[in-house]
Length: 177
Image (cartoon, rainbow, N blue to C red):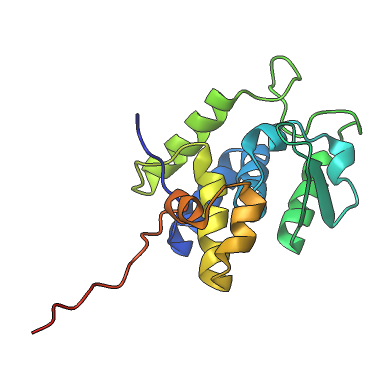
């Protein structure tokens, strides 16, 4: 089983966003929400137009835990969503399959992300990359592993650090002479 990694390099994130925006505004919005929210993909895929329409703060009730998570949309994302949903009904899923109207499947998201990742030279990209990327950059900005651990519902900070691709460095013991 392949271990997916966060995207640590901002330039790579911007390259992927550029690729996705050219191919599909839907895919760009999905990626951008994922890397800016830390919310599980399964919960992002259940978003409906009414959940984001005319909002800056997006609230999501986690399917697995029942906990409410929220995140702010920056102006770029808000504008992209405005353009994307202007012809959609409030009850429409935000990320529908063109065939069924139901949310796109996880495997489709994997393929979208993996293809874009390969175009910028990243081979360890998957659906968890979105959440891991959010966590990695949040940690780099704040160094607050406990807030991140709580957000991710992890049992220990060490699990959170490993999840976001940060090696814990334990001080080496000095040999006494």
